[in-house]
Amino acid sequence: MWLLISGESRKSGYEEICDEVNRIHQEWGRVRKRLDDTTDPDLVDSVIYELKSLEKRYGFLIKKLKEYKRSVI
Image (cartoon, rainbow, N blue to C red; front, side, top):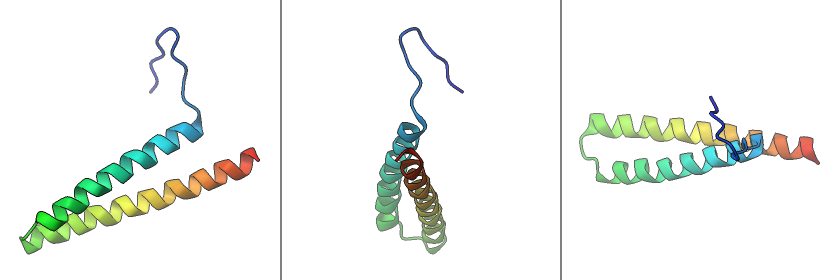
């Protein structure tokens, strides 16, 4: 939910998706590093699951960006 402060404008849908893509990309890097540092087999599976989830979300958002760009052009 947006709380607008005087002078602050709401981001466009495209900007919101771009911000989310950037956040997921950063998170993916952190999780990838954690995978490199993890040795317990059960935890490795858990981290791989988390990576796969981030990759799916990233792919979804990239598709949304492409759709948004097509609708604007």
